[in-house]
Image 1 (spheres, rainbow, N blue to C red):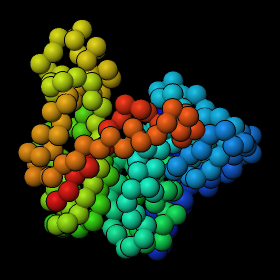
Image 2: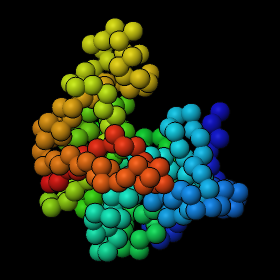
Image 3: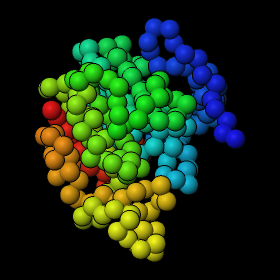
Length: 247
């Protein structure tokens, strides 16, 4: 039986609050206080990042990991995020990014997931119930590898994105050319797909897959702007590229 976090739904349409998560975050902030590392998601500094068996470093406060810290750093440094009114859709939300968006009054944040208790609405990415062109910005991080019909999911993301809108769609890139799990032997799937829940391994052709859905795609090497010391300070993955999709 899964333990679901205590959740307080907001009456003003804003994201829910999780009082236990917030209280524990404040305790961890005190325990790991310092100025050696800095989280771009919660904008706080600490003596160290926490170890995670899944990723290599968790923020002591908001529990962000590498790819979300790079996302928040990019939004802070390279865009006008938060300086004008936008409606944002977060697919398969994390608490760290929800709270990052909450810190910007002009960001109208909506999150969906098929099962996550954090999500504001329960919804299938392949059958979004939003009207056409509902969102200025869409964030979809490490979701498509779990979806049977990823092309249908991408068509739905494209449909609900406004003309002139943009999003960042990320998947793990392991190989040169995308391959479906069903095309691999059990041994190959274990080696290439990495996790049992991944239905495919994406390759360097992911840009072409996104373009096939209609997006204009820029593959950004934003992370390369940082020195080794900055990579360590912000806890970033130096190999992560950002797939910025525009409609």
